[in-house]
Length: 361
Ligand SMILES: [Zn+2]
Image 1 (spheres, rainbow, N blue to C red):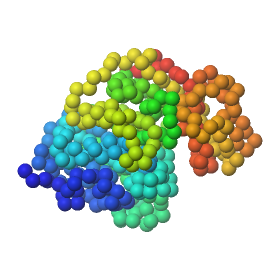
Image 2: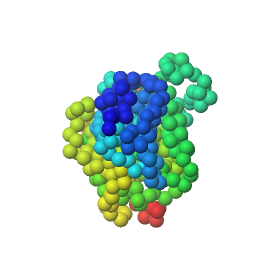
Image 3: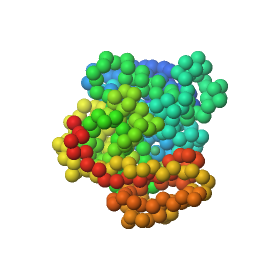
Image 4: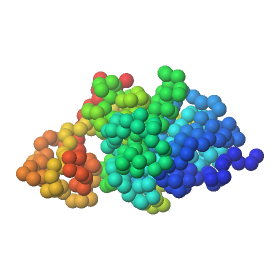
């Protein structure tokens, strides 16, 4: 049978197609020979609905930070196999390539860090978004592409979940790689659940592919994963899968287990998971966030320090104008240090070990 793909996607390379149209692409749809409905909602946004689908509505997001290429390449391979009908879906899936313009530039962001502008932090009114013409919208509205993109992605995620009846299982996996190495190569940020229990099934699922370290958040955030959990009651995580490298330079053997898990999740293959036992995991909670307050802010450790590095009590971690930040908790570890953030933003997060006993379901 001849390919059902439209001419501009004849090579089934949805990532290349996305990067050719980094800011905008008009909606279009087509049906594969195996009956899978494919809807392009915008650049980097493709919704797949197989003829028969299960109870899961799964959002796979990559490239919210443009230079975190390994997950982008994993999702590009999955979309290609779906479009070439080598991979038969058993669930509805929405793939999102977050920031195509930044991907083209090989940078984390052009203007704004997208993972700080979800849950309405973009401050773009839905009515304004609806009335402005789609093309060149960022310029029309005087906004960064990234803020506009966050507002748009929220609309697509809402559409994806809300066209279905309630009572289905929702997941939003936002796939990243970190700027630096990590004591634990793969880890997940579990967004604040407002005192709802943490999911043992999700711990086990991610543990099965080597994500054994979880950072359990205790406050609302403007990340994509918090948005998915809070606004849509999805099982949502920010998954940090390794170190960020340029396109084509990733060692995919380090990501193989994750790639296999994602493939199994969307194609109905059996996933071998172990029952949840807390001691199989490294669980942390945030102890404090250290924000950059002035241009004088400096970090007091080697630039190549790994995430989850622990220090003795009393160690000076950072200095800002008139302030010195010292370790004051046993087991206190740092993650995401970045002195180059804007004034007022988080320059590092300090975490400490935690137990979830009695707080899982
Ligand atoms: Zn990232």
